[in-house]
Length: 169
Image: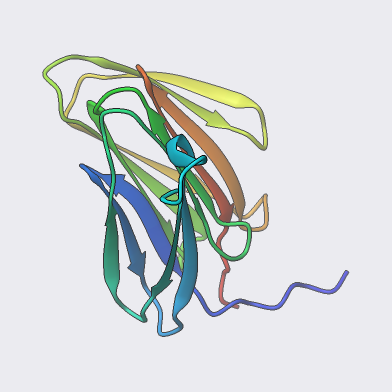
């Protein structure tokens, strides 16, 4: 089997407070599309962005009731859905040198949060109670050849991260 061609891109997209923050970590510009799934029957449901090299831009969102989908290259998908402002910040970043993704969970409430982390490739679900302010999870992607598909749930909020990390040889 012939290996796929390495795409010269590395970028992160995360929901932070009331914004979808898009960060380009390479020299090559990246095209991204954001869909506001609560506004599919209006003219304001579709937003197209070109993320400049080594830059960060953001898209303001309604955090009280939201359903956003972000699409990029190489199977890149982010879905953020909820019916109230999250008590949890979720940040997914790629670590190309270690062939892994790093997930940082930050409890921004005074309560213990019950969180589930579902690996859609293995159908394994991890349940954890987040009593501390922050938890870091590192997931190696060597066995999946860089592909990942994870869903994180907390109360009425869902974060879905899927795509492929392009490892440099």
